[in-house]
Length: 99
Ligand SMILES: C[C@H](O)[C@H](O)[C@H]1CNC2=NC(N)=NC(=O)C2=N1
Image (tube, rainbow, N blue to C red; front, side, top):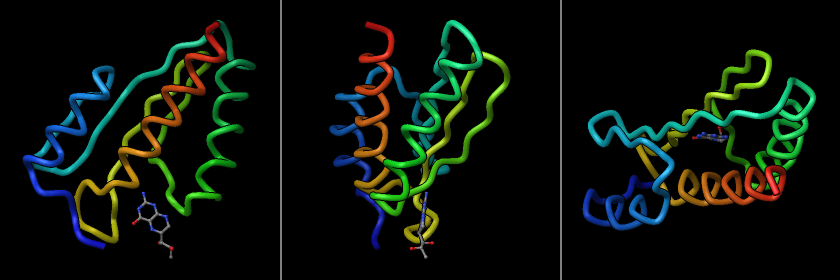
């Protein structure tokens, strides 16, 4: 899988304003905050299933109500459409859980 070209990556990232991009390393990050650990872990369980379905897996760190997510495509050596897709699904899952 080849990484996104910088102009394409920038255009797609503009649609994910909650994510911080480091185009030099080809990674995007976002911190999700929940009411408590149960909510945070429920989100992780949902996104674990999504990850298996997409065959695309996050680097993430959880403490209590916080989930820090980093996305990159190891096989591409940078950002790929799979990172963008995963981030979008995560944003939707978070928005639904916060609603
Ligand atoms: C063998 C397997 O399909 C690959 O290693 C997949 C699994 N999940 C993955 N997840 C991420 N984030 N990057 C990858 O390159 C990747 N590759």
